[in-house]
Length: 164
Ligand SMILES: [Zn+2]
Image 1 (cartoon, rainbow, N blue to C red):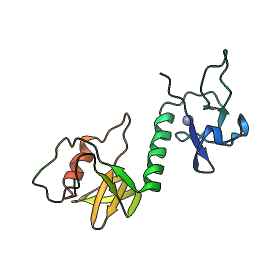
Image 2: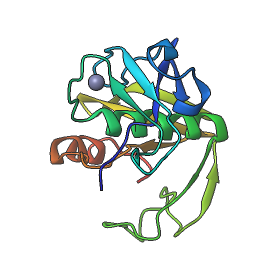
Image 3: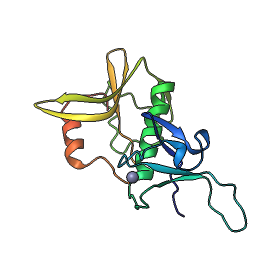
């Protein structure tokens, strides 16, 4: 199924296609390449079957625009709710780790949600998409759709003595 771009940046804020004027007047930019977009919020008809979406004014095909929008949207939700539901499965959960925050499907509330924080792990650094804090404990969140955390980043996190 084709993934339509339904969120774009308007004055730096992630905005839905139905919340802006239709056409070139939408004043939105692509969350990936920052090119101007056209809102195509047409009503579906027999001839026009697509759901409302944004297209690039230049007509360019922008791979990754959908994922960028999704990424920004996920961050916005986490920033606003300061809440996350932990996954049902932890691929390398260590029962002996008393610092672990993992508890299958537990909903966690945080006091702080910080974005793009540079974090020291041993002698190296990583930049986490989001760093959530609860007291002294930190949880790093990476949003993944098709691009997952690479092994190098994973290794750095493991060297950092965090509450995995
Ligand atoms: Zn683009």
